[in-house]
Structures are given as structure tokens and as C-alpha cells.
Image (cartoon, rainbow, N blue to C red; front, side):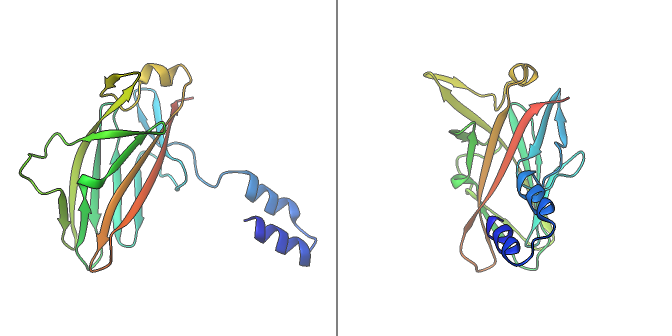
Length: 179
């Protein structure tokens, strides 16, 4: 962005304000999902009112947040099968990596989910965060959010589409008080 601004400034001395506004203000919309007074939104991606949903490369990711567990729904709209490695998924709460818990996965089940073309899968996940040698199963504290404290969550999903190598898709969320 800075390169565009400097390059533009070098050749044309008009409309500097438009480019500066583009650089200084975020390009995402306001928060979209409300959970008991806590507003959850994508940090960097465009938000849609009432839902946390993102589509890329024919794959739709939908998130249904809660303070104790999140549901992730993945829909495959592409012509190739996709694989999700739930075992290597990361759930980061306020900068701390958390232990991911899968309430519906049995020990014998495979950590991979294979989603055929035009199909979807969902997974509910919970976390255990460790702070001051104390385990906590809440993803965020609603009382703290209502007092004005923000929380950030990052979900990293290892996914592969077709015969392509596995890559990591990262989703950043911000949780704040509803105004």
C-alpha cells in the first residue's frame, strides 16, 4: 500500500487524500455476530451482517461462536475433494495457543475429514486455556467483554484441495462489547 502511495505521488500530485484515507482506515466492516452482548467479527476479512462466513477457492467457511465452544462448518463448492486435518488445527486465544477439544470425536476416529464435491462437514470445538497454572474451558469471558475488554481469536485450519499440498488458512476474529 505504501509503495502504491509513493509511486502515485511521484508521478501524479493529485488525490493524495484519497490514498491516505485508504491507508489509514480499515477496509473491513463492523462486527456482525452477537453473542449475549459480545460482538464477534472477522478482523481482516469482510463481514456480512448476522454471520461469520468466508468463501475462497470454492470452499465456504462458516463460524458459529459461543463462549464455550465454536462450530465450524465447511462447505466444498469446488469440483475436487478437500481434506481438513483437525488434529493439527490451532486455536489461539489472546495470543496463547490453546489445547483444542473435540467433543464429538472418538479416540478411534481419523483426524482427517474428507469433504466430497458439493458436500459439507461441521465440527464443534472447545478449548482449554492455561493461565497462571489454572485451566479454563471458556474461549472468552462475557463479563470481561461487557466491561470493555476486547479479546482476539485466531483459528488456523490445515486444508488441502485435490492433489495440491496442504496449506494453512488463518482466520482472525475480534470480540468486543456491543455498542
